[in-house]
Image (cartoon, rainbow, N blue to C red; front, side, top):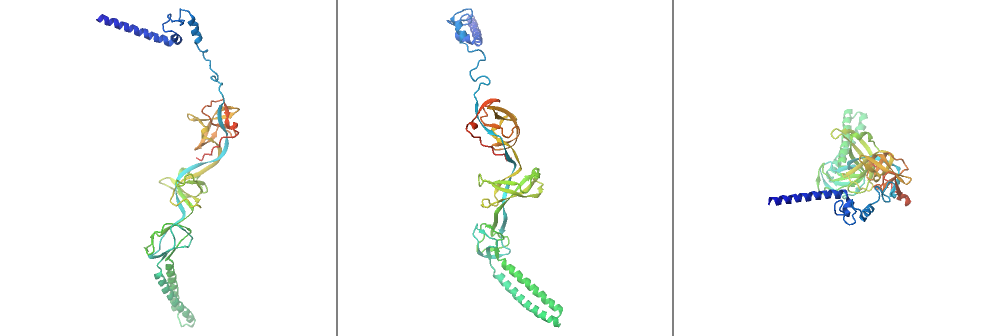
Length: 406
């Protein structure tokens, strides 16, 4: 039994060794291995193995491919067809750097309408949200007491005026002493002042618009008892909107009155409002290390409201520079290249870029105005490869890039 097992094991080992040897031979002689199934010297019919000639030997030699290194059309260097591309002429454009900030809209003039004294509302002369002119009556208060006070003051003034005139006639005759006449003059002046005060109190019972603008919502009703500080309504002059925004002190030297600003709001997607810097605060906030800048813009359509949250873009460092579309760049690690078209060939050239904006980039070095660059089709291009410019074939050019703003 043991002898039978040893014999079986020996046979399995021999078979495994022969199989491994045949696998090695087949990998080293693929042509011979595909033609015949036996080891060297035992080729099948037509195999033409070593040591045994036959027609198969010749046929195996003829089955091989072409000479090593041979390539089909277009496979070798310089054998490709022109790559279709779209080119564009390099031009200079006016660009500027942008400083972005967040601001809050404020009216050119704004006031909370209230009363100077406690009184009853007798009439309301405005409607919610309407425009009013300067001096227009907004609210009338109870004026009975003020009119009575004015009448008393006028009566006292009339009496003191009469005494003054009699004393003035008697003074030259020495019938009235100088001190008595001075008392009469003082009484007359005091009564005049009382009349002015009573008239002012009467005028305070009529609340007028201090400037032209648009009133807000009415907060009181006829018959309400109001006191100083009670909000009657609001009045805003929004023909000009002021925008206050903070700018880091590192940009302080670039700030000055007159710089153009562009304002956007989420309330009006796609709409841009233009204005200018009106003034720069004289102090830097020691906590945030920023300075407050105020810009103004016309609001003729009345779209912007006081208190709105706005995105502000401050344009500075305006200059002229070479700008190309961003898709013309071919990045390689930390370097940037473009393909320049000249004489039907594409030259790969390294460039230095400056400021960027969505869709465009500034070129500081590497391109000259008037050169043509590839803006579409850079994926299949190789340096010094032939190209076919579709922009020239169509008699047009690719759209020019918008200048970067930041």
